[in-house]
Length: 446
Ligand code: NDP
Image (cartoon, rainbow, N blue to C red; front, side, top):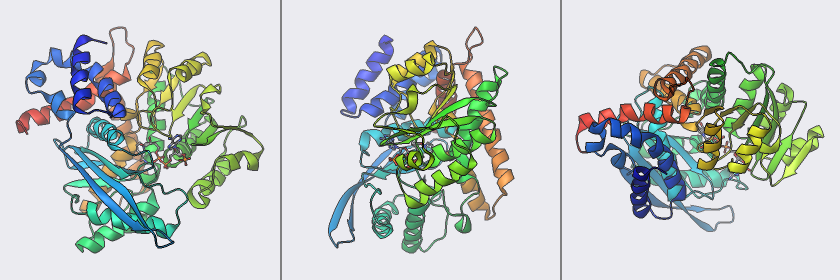
């Protein structure tokens, strides 16, 4: 490691002990940015990177709720308001038992760069709870969401902080939280995105992260005069992002052969066609079942306790969670001929795995760039809410495609190396940084 990065990281680790995911996310960015900042001393003197790595505000609260047996349960609630230099805080809420401060800080940190890349005026934030919606009844989820929002409501607002969904937070949870916010404030405003179509939501928002990740893969392939047509695709996860990535990539002529959940993965060599995908969506979104049932339904292989990266593919779309591709798995993907990785999930590759992708000079699109379509359409939802109108499906999809192309262009602008190779890690880190850093310079030492 570069000694400047090393000393910067020593300080981050000392100030934020036991937050491994946060250290990992900051290190990945620092490796791209520190050499750039050395060449641009205005950022160095104003300590922009040091400031960006410190949240503007961290809110931690108790979430008590009653389960169906009448027993009191207690969870932790969080909101990290990371950076508001270019717009109000914006970023999802995650409900998962693994949620802790370090995970939410890594997500909020990445969100600052991602939101800047979208070209829309959004700052960065993230929040959530260690509440596990799995195995809970709809009534329990509702009571939890109402209690969570009762506290969160005092910290957010359509011009202050606008949360959205993430792992464990979909349309159902957003609905319960929006209902409670409206009741507390007596205001119908766009305080959350990912809302239902009938009550202020944007068309294409549910699809946006998955579609955007595929549009980004398409843009990367185009630099090599190639396309998704006929490619074998391996996807991890089977939630919101995975489902719509599978839908779009199939529409564009690719064949999706894997999906997974936290218990294991299925391998369907014939491909997950429209009919199978509809079945999968019903299994996951309505019945809330396990991926193993797909294997039983279609008579294909199910591998318990493993991730899908040993399956041969051309394109990998990790769409489940952080650190789901390690060094060995990255090497295995490359050995099997995979040459495109477009990240639907946030930080799904460990820093060692990223290193493998960069060394092998594959088309590697990091999450900050590749999954920015979700927050971009959230930004479009905010615009529609402010204007009190809703755009057609085609119009939103067109804007999403344009934003993904623009993000790709930014990556080329800041990430193209002397020999013409595009380093998307460098491109997205520097491209996301410059706009936020310049805004911070203009706003003084705040
Ligand atoms: P969902 O809750 O809809 O789906 C998550 C999927 O990932 C499920 O299949 C889940 O399996 C699996 N998963 C979750 N945790 C783990 C784990 N620890 N190990 C293995 N599998 C796991 O979430 P989303 O699809 O919304 O989010 C997926 C990823 O995309 C996350 O990294 C998120 O931060 C990122 N993202 C999401 C955006 C959005 O708009 N929703 C925007 C940008 C990024 P199981 O059901 O077993 O838990």
